[in-house]
Length: 553
Image 1 (spheres, rainbow, N blue to C red):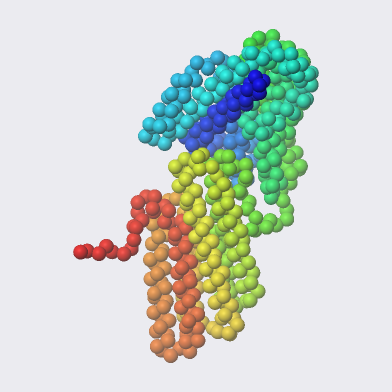
Image 2 (cartoon, one colour; image 1 turned 180 degrees about the vertical axis):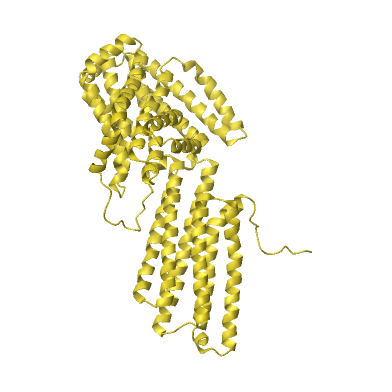
């Protein structure tokens, strides 16, 4: 019974450590995520600057996975070459060791104060950033509390014969230690938490230093497995170069460290007799040596990865998402950026539909009409994928700006998809009806329709740009297009009726078709304006709640 209770206490302390690490990471991401992403993007020109940026950003975020996802996003968008991206990951691996260095000292006495200040900031802060920093302080306090409890638990059982026998067997099989720690780190999604756990076990002499060093190597391996496994479903093999390169570099370093583990371990223990500190030092030393080994050879290493994972040469399925990385859902700011990039593909597909519909009205090609209608299936598939991806994000990890951006992306994709439905269900059937009946618009009527379609495609390009820039001036300009489009529809309708009064037979034959097309084009334009302009205008307070004048009593 006592042993069972001890296992429960141990599991609870480990869970508390993992939760504290999670709170630190999410709090930092909410408070400084956008700024850190911008900093990372500006430091991608040289490998040394990229290394330092990766180390600094990860030291703040305490998540090499978050840094890796940001970097993978830059690399997938063609904004950074593979060499600086690999340099960032080498820096990120060093950055994760810094908090372990800090917590290797006896700072557990600060736990109550950190939790107290954190709770006050979390509950009483008037600003969002102070609220998020309170979350960080609570997380740090919980981590220190969990480490203190782990040390206390291990004190009573470090001399247990069965435990000694088990750990003695483990210390003679470093490869088993590496695999065990790699599995735990993969499951926990946090090398920091696992290394801190190893450090506390070694500090109480529950495991010998050599076994602790092997476990640390496993933790370094495990944290590189997740990005590769979760990116295995990516369509383009080239997108897996960065996580594979990070994993292979760590595997090479681990093999070398295992080969020299005996003399290296004795040297480390001689230089640093404190068991907690020696584990932290070994963790930092391993990643620093790995960086020194690989930084000079990143160029040939990147070429090797390019040969191992060449870019996809066959055309991709247009309805298959390209940017919705499942691993990025852990980092909301990266996930929202990916969803926004995918949403722009909907605008491109709608643009192709409008261009096809325009050509079909002029040429009367039935094959072109059928090809254009198939684009609506692409819109539906991408729309569903984006909505599913966004709704899978944890609301607790989203800051206020993240919630706003998520709503804007959903508004954009829903309206673009609805505009595509109008093209598919109304515009293209009208074009098909004209071909079947052999009808021809008057020259003036056809010119009006084509001019409105050209204006519609211009508005779509403006909406796509506005969706990314969120510029209020562009939003006002696009919103004004709704009024201009309504006036153009009214003018085209009036001209049509003038031709009918003049007895024009060509206008009389296509009258209903012509008027339906004008209304459809206006409806598509309304969806385009609502997709991009209205969210920006609403946020700036420039959107009126209603166009209907208030009744005066």
